[in-house]
Amino acid sequence: MSKKINNKKASDDQFNRAADLIGLDEKIRTSLNVPDRELMVEVPLRKDDGSIESFRGYRVQHNNSRGPFKGGIRFHEEVDLDEVRALAALMTWKTALVDIPYGGGEGGISVDPSTLSDLELERLSRRFFRAINPIIGVNRDIPAPDVNTNPQIMAWFMDEYGMINGHTPGIVTGKPIELGGSLGRNAATGKGTAIIARETANLLNMDLQDAKIVIQGFGNVGSFAGRFLHEMGSKIVAVSDVNGGLYDPDGLNIPSMIKHNNSNGTIKGFSQGDKVSNEDILNIECDFLIPAALGGVVHKMNVDKLNCKVIIEAANGPVTPPADDILFQKGVHVVPDILTNAGGVTVSYFEWVQNLQQFQWTEEEVNNKLEHKMVAAFNEVADMMNSKKTSMRMAAFAVAIDRVARSFEMRGV
Ligand code: NAD
Image 1: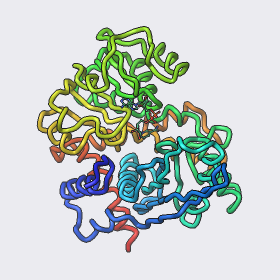
Image 2 (image 1 turned 180 degrees about the vertical axis):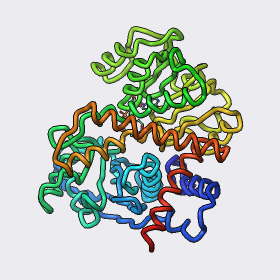
Image 3 (image 1 turned 180 degrees about the horizontal axis):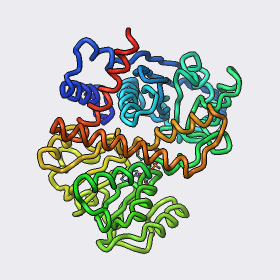
């Protein structure tokens, strides 16, 4: 089995357990779990020195029973077909869970983009998008940013697609605001995470006011989640980034820390708090632990040292499946990534809708609609968890798989 957290074997296991829970008809299991289409492309790049290098690119379209395929494009040297398959499947369940009219897909190039110049990155991005052009479309498959891809790369994708097919801003989401990006998209995943933490506190009769929170990772997701939870009255007692963490049991001044982080690109050097390592930050006594950086940080070897009541999975796959089982037995709630971080794809969907309408919504409209979607999904997961006496993760998968299965059956084969 691959050592990666996002591998197809792990996602198959989750799928099968949730499918058992809802008694999913054996006859449609394979259809729902096997990708609809997989495209592997060769992406040649003319380097600045005139030489040519070749890279392997992928687009996997997992399932479109509920609408066009939707999912990120990742540029990373470890991208391979197995990882892309797993991420594509997770997108099918995530879009179904928040009930937006999409299926799931994912793509990427096996490349370390830090080795490329800006012009090389642009040429590679354009060439890749041209290579997958035959299978994407505004009503077929709508890519988005993922690891090491960003609004600028989405702008190049949109431009390249437009040269072949005519101006089509809705072909990608996560674009710069000037090119049809949505207001509120930047903060959406962190905002969604804070909403889910708030709803979890209500469900478990915990008081979010004065709740002690630890956040690992202070990038886009971690810093916005921290900001919104601080505004809700919680005490963020520890935060870390790639350079290590800071701890103050009385609560860190999050607005000042965000300013420091924005100016310095790191929380390192911030004036408040005692230093704590990225391993030790996970063991700090708290109500909510929010891993918002990497996959696989809570695993079999460190799970017994954790000191939290709830884990809110803001990153993708921060808790490994064996650790997840141990936490469930111990009564520690784990709010799964497909629910917690679904705010990002939800506002991506709003971006696509605005592009199709050729009309921009206000940030307030976007945030109100996001709140509604996240709370509705949370309530469905909570109901499923209570009725099936299962974990939140299994409940989230069960809600999502049931929704996809019903669409699949209604459409017919
Ligand atoms: P980002 O690059 O903006 O931030 C990552 C943060 O993690 C940075 O603060 C970085 O310093 C920190 N970090 C890196 N290595 C670390 C380590 N070893 N220990 C502690 N911190 C470390 O990324 P992001 O967009 O905030 O994404 C974070 C996670 O959320 C990822 O798993 C991503 O897949 C997931 N996610 C993001 C979005 C989104 O909309 N941005 C949506 C869904 C899921």
